Image (tube, rainbow, N blue to C red; front, side, top):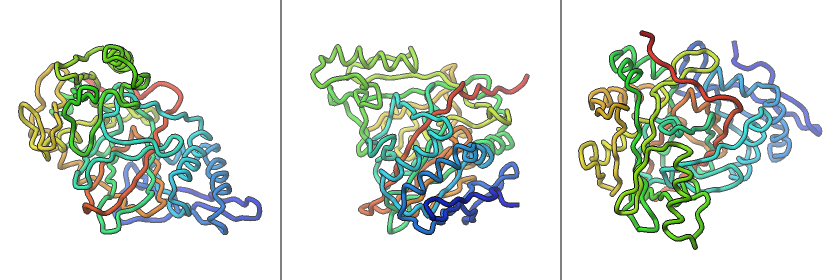
Length: 383
């Protein structure tokens, strides 16, 4: 039985519909295909206003909310335009029509910039860099319910795909393989240790993926160029305290921010556990840059302090390696075509990035949104 029934309409004499399709590598999780692929058909695909109206009406009926809950990820293909402005219009139509609001970024630890309304570039780190699985901002105390990706320009010489993993399946596989680790994570929780260099002090930053605590989406939301360093720090601290009171300024002008978080969240609908954290991504990146051991300085100049148990204990590397390998086995790789739009439930689906050929252009954009109501609560092993 198809996942969607009749998603069609007629506007100004133009017939439109979303038709279910398949993609290589799709899998079935809890009885639902992952990801769901919908192809947009229109008798005049150039009419963006019609597409926008159609997406808005479908969303206002709760259809996208249901599809995201059931499938975790929905690929919309054939929308007819790959511009960032069009992405902004389409994703805003989907999200505002179901009652969502734009996510406010605090503590950004990567290189990205604004592209259009509620649209940013995805992490602009060097093409050779692989990003491993993580739920967006899940290592922070403040995170979005949804993150959506849009392909402005696909890499022409291959690579640059976006691997995604269902967080429910990842939890199950890790629990099947190393159940004692799930128990330890549940009991000991996590602390994320993040170093933010300073642009004012010209602190060493990650080459090719520079970010600073003064950044407008990091802790510089209220900082002015004319502010004294004391004022900049005071304004930054105000933002840091929205996330945590556990931070420390360093002699070189950088700041270390520690956020205390659970490893798992509960699906608010099914109440099943979700693997919701970013330590796999942090471990993989640190490993690639030779920073697994003190002083945790990578070959690209970055400082990669490990995520630890909240007790301060190091997580055994063999546990981290096992989780990394399981996540790679579970990946569905989104092979981008210009104009593809992927809607993700950030609670249920993690994402990463594949490398691509140096010199080839690949531009993927993101838009992050939040839903009304409380965040998913912590899931713990019953004792």
